[in-house]
Length: 66
Image (cartoon, rainbow, N blue to C red; front, side, top):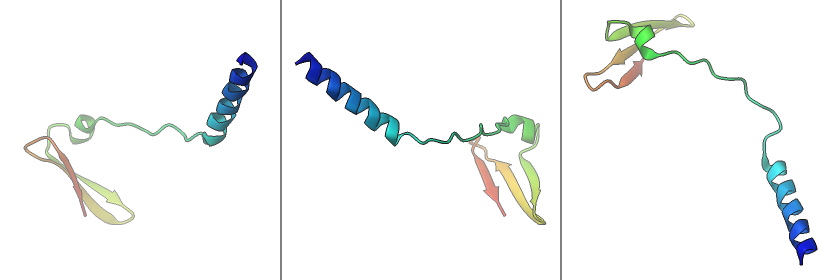
């Protein structure tokens, strides 16, 4: 029975390894919102000639609008 258990464990390992993605994604850049907004409640971001507004609400939620 121990041989059977070992075989099943090896098969399970292969299945788990096969289901994992083979490429890794680069780490995402992280910026604290307090650094972006500083003391203000709103920040204008220009992207491809368009203006976007990042606002902090009274409840400390962020809203991005075009």
